[in-house]
Length: 365
Ligand SMILES: Cc1c2[nH]c(c1CCC(=O)O)Cc1[nH]c(c(CCC(=O)O)c1C)Cc1[nH]c(c(CCC(=O)O)c1C)Cc1[nH]c(c(CCC(=O)O)c1C)C2
Image 1 (cartoon, rainbow, N blue to C red):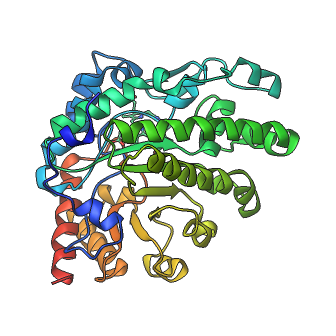
Image 2: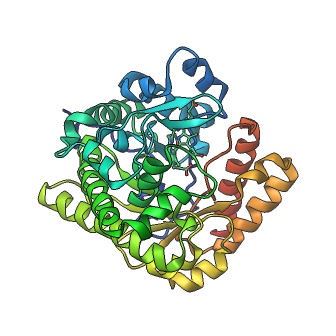
């Protein structure tokens, strides 16, 4: 495997500097789910391969990671490895397929704690998910230092929810019933996912990931009380243990981002659990977030992804307002408030990227 020393030098380190809280000349920008379904070049590749076949083929995962970077050039300041949060449930032994028009489907989801015996006892993460590491290492080379590369995972609560619901769900009622019916087994499952996640994130950094993001996409489905019990302790463990393990292995202490979608109530707690960056969805006002987080973390986000359907004028106006609201003193990484939606026109995204870069540079002059 390549060592960090042998990667091409980074030409645009704006995202890394901003994530560490340094004062930078303009807000860097990248987009959650930037490699994927809204791009025609993605569908060209996808029509010949299943989704997880792409994830498991480093050349294809690399090609898709680079697609938005090739298309938008210097308008993007970061990249994220093409993969999915559901590779961890797969590594734990569950079968997941990606069905067109439906999203992920588990063939045999967890129904009661008896089903936990179907999960692998000792997961050799490096063996099971080595294909993600290979994709990261290859991509670091092919990026040629244009922008830094994110590795990522899904947070334990979000993954547990998928493993029980068996796919997307409106209410999460099956997964939530575990919290109260089987609290001991729930904590056991969350701990198991956490342990695998720590190994996996460390492996991603060893392979070349320069930042890490934890997606707790379903955080906002929990009450504040249940979030504090079933999500927060595990995402905190992840940042603490990953940093310990990186230090022990002499690996770089990479910036970590937490995105707990919908968890506006947790904003203050999220500033104290070892992440450099807190990613905001669009329901949180940037000035409010700045006040609550007391400038302890960098903020990421947060335009409503649906504004990209609103026409160029609305995009420019909303993006300008957002950049001003995060303020000219920095500590902002621009993004959307959640992933870009599959039917967005790629040209609309370009208007957003251009506006953010231009306005953010202007106000910091
Ligand atoms: C970071 C990432 C993810 N998925 C993909 C990426 C890499 C691409 C990128 O972001 O650039 C590819 C990625 N993942 C998927 C696709 C489309 C697959 C296809 O049909 O071709 C792509 C390109 C499939 C997928 N995978 C998932 C869904 C959502 C299902 C639901 O509503 O519950 C879906 C539809 C699960 C998933 N996957 C992911 C999340 C966290 C972010 C979020 O909240 O959006 C989640 C919840 C994360």
